[in-house]
Image (cartoon, protein in one colour):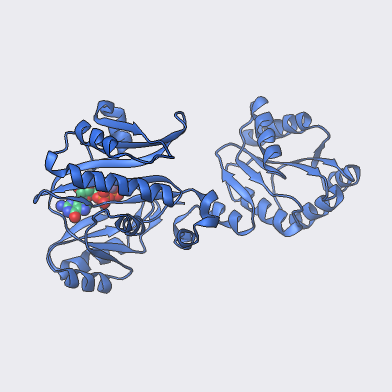
Length: 381
Ligand code: GDP
Ligand code: MN
């Protein structure tokens, strides 16, 4: 789950990281009032959950409160990379001497968190990694020990940070580590961390991504979720307790159980098909849930066939089949559907669905082959 810049910076501030004074506004009038309170120059910043807002014209400096109001009017009407701007952050403008990158994420290959820094801040770090990888300093963090003082000094030296800023830098990097660890983040990033003209460090931008699997114990963060800014189908799926991840293939999969869903995707790929999603509808899914799942799968235009693979254990297959039929009444898909049911009352379930003109299969291999074939046929049309 991504947090907005203003949310991330508020968290950073709690961990002792200096941030500019400022507040978030949802109207131009409010933006003007904040600019008046702050006095002097301000920066008006669109709050959308994408990077590169600066380049897209979503970050602008204003010299007067009136100008802040004008810019806010403009920015609040904008869309950035397809996302509508509903809020702006009005911050005291920083006098920038140099922009630094500082971020922490998980290095899966190393099986531990890594802190990265670069003297080439401000631009997207992916860009720096591609063009000038030698400008990125990386230090792995032992999750049990946390970021140590000596490590933060190593990084400061590695990016040629002026000596006079090392103490501040240690405080900021250790603060960033604590923010990362205590909030179950998968990313905590300051880009740019700025050296101001009067030689202090300030976090001008902030970005955090929180591990969704940890939200159950991060109630305060869970509250910060901004549904307006997230992928529609994944949000919809969450509402129904469906475990859904969008992919870009043609075969929409509806499966009960995460392991079975993974297996289904593997077998689809084995026969040269591409899954359109991962979807685990969970145990004991009723027809409401099945209908929601079908609706979500069908809302993706690239889906050419639906593959249903259900293992009936406690839930009986005939009940699942009736659920699917009820859902079909509501959703009415126009693409082929392949079903494989196995387990309690499978024969009865299969018979019900075959009557409804669905393609049925006994084994998963058979089902996957039929789905791939149907997808190819439907693609050619
Ligand atoms: P992003 O483009 O979405 O990463 O948004 P940022 O908050 O990083 O802003 C983009 C760029 O705008 C920064 O790299 C700075 O160069 C510039 N910028 C942002 N805030 C200020 C500010 O307070 N003063 C000045 N002079 N420039 C700023
Ligand atoms: Mn930035």
